[in-house]
Picture 1 (spheres, rainbow, N blue to C red):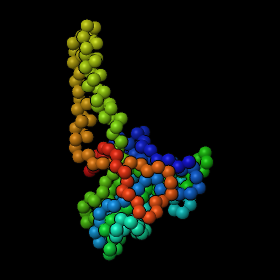
Picture 2 (cartoon, rainbow, N blue to C red):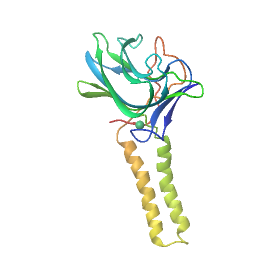
Picture 3 (cartoon, rainbow, N blue to C red):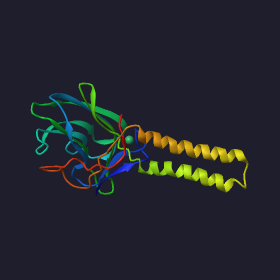
Picture 4 (cartoon, rainbow, N blue to C red):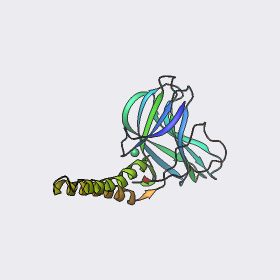
Length: 225
Ligand SMILES: [Ca+2]
């Protein structure tokens, strides 16, 4: 089975990473973002990755980069190798040449092949694409939904705690509860207000897209650098 999900337990950029899981003998295009505008020249692609049990098959895990002149047909431009085997979080980067006529970029995060019962798992985080020292694309694979839930929940919990404890405890703990709840909720509110851009939804299972591909469906909440 091949699956893509957010992982809140392992990441380099809070609060989550993208985790690709593959126990099949074929490579897994677990996530991609199409239609990133690009110019003639070169781009630098950088990503943090961690991997487990990636089989030495067709290069294993990588960031594949494709280009297009029209957003319909895509051609292979190069890749950044994340490799095979097992290894902890590390930053990988590489330069990709953008030939004449290419105006759009597609970045694919690929998990290598695995075995039944011993899946190849690759975590990706902190994806960055630079051109001429300018950041042209960033994704921290942040799923803020649970965080926002916590942010809303905290002040409500704080108020509830205050009301409930009013007849029971000393004044100071009620005040501390309210302040903590407010700080938590406020912190999340501040973060989400600091420049949210849509994050592409994780595509479902499947092989590499062929022919016309719509830009990744847009979900919510990504904090960009
Ligand atoms: Ca992250």
